[in-house]
Length: 112
Length: 113
View: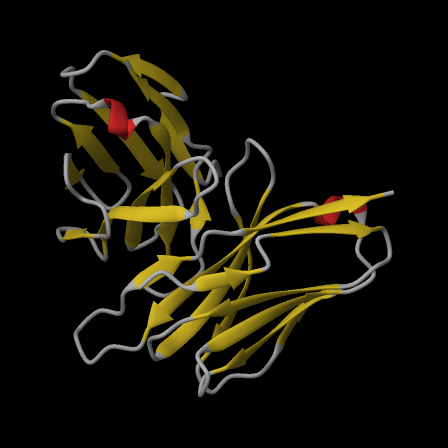
């Protein structure tokens, strides 16, 4: 039982490059989330998926897209990376909206 | 809307107590508390629901005043292992189909021997 897994753990991109962050959970959770965490700041919600087949914007969705591939997997795509997207990205899941969230280990992304 | 946490940072000696506050300008359905150690992912501590009771977790407990949209986390007889950054997360009580969820900016707790 791995919980929430994320790949990759580290990534360096050049401005304008694209990439996809992968997230998977094995807890049969309905809801999944993508957050970013900048130094000295809390977690800001980028996108979430309340259930399989649905996605919605969070606080800071600009520059990102998501796909809820199936119940287990929720990916985050940066189409054209910008230095302002340098951050630590966390994926989380919960049994349903409003329930406790379980976080993955995070992806540290640097855009130069 | 992002809740406001106070204080931003606390330094304690082992065995001392601390209180961390979280307040929102919106009506709340629930408040979550998480702890994050340096370089790690946040870990869930507890959830307090509107109309629910005060929760406890070993020597860490919390209260939720839904009329004031405020929650407090109480750490008693602190241990070295309590060090980390504590985040509250607030679920706004909405008439829409979904309740928006926001994390506060965190309170950094440092427990010294």
